[in-house]
Image (cartoon, rainbow, N blue to C red; front, side, top):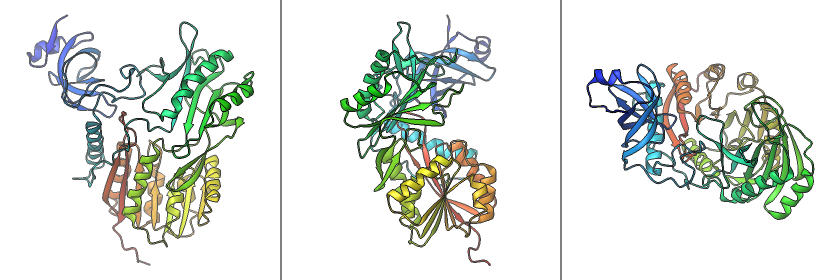
Length: 471
């Protein structure tokens, strides 16, 4: 096999631009999925497990006329941003993409992604992006982990994350990114499942019982929930085993069974049953108490989410008489702390179960100036009895539906804060809000919610450009 260098004759390079060839390439950047990006003869090459500044030998795997996907074969010269991974299966597990990248460069790359998205997609010149808000810890931060289950060739139960681009499980007994208090349960419950003889679901044949093991911990309370996701509700001796697990682990406050028999990649089904203890754990967030169910959406990095909330407090400088609308409010994670400093708050959430839980959490904290509405944001906005002073948007990764943004433009609140976990959709939504001339982008705060991965959270602040006092 002839090794090709990007300094060779372009005609010769072009003739050898094919699957299986080894090329020598320097990594110049990182893309949105965390792959290293280099150029070879003017063509783009994507190489996972590399970082800006690496010089590598890479084998071409999928070749197109102008770009190729490649596999790292040999590291010829290591980048100053490269570190030794702190996980022994980092080169196999798809749970993290950047274990080999220094924390400082991860943060720089994430902020750059936000700037580039706002510039290229949003059309903003010199967007006002602050230095990234760093995580309190780059390890042991995840308060929830959900592992697919499988069987290896020897017939042993496995639990872990998938290899990148596959559904092959990398078996784990611990994970340095999740809260360390979950590690003993991961190793132990996997053995318990093996001993119980419950069958493991095979997604190819749609046969078997157990699909996932989910573990959640209250960072401030230490309370833990364990949930088995099953295609069937009848798991022999599950109740006895669940009670034994709770005796063995005093922090384990509940064991639940979620039913999901559908042919789907969605993890949780619609029904969750309490098998032993409680079906909720108690967590403390921003000084308030929250009850979290197994399937509840809650930010996986508790401390980072609190830090981002403080940025919102600082930027909005609440006076205590504002009317706040929290769109996509979930269980009230941000709504309730903000409501404490506002005159009135309304949260909108399409999932009825989350709305019910948000109302419960409001009662738990004796917060009476908040109302939660079930339905789509665009439909519920039409029923508001007043124009909000403040709107908080925290949509899923796909961003806001256009109907939501158009409804906001018609509503004309004075200030909007957009929380997003995907820079591209954030930039798209901000462009629509600002190109109308009604709003101006005044600040963007990126935050490193997910160290060791490519994901970055941001909150963008908009202020009205129109006359707020017009009749």
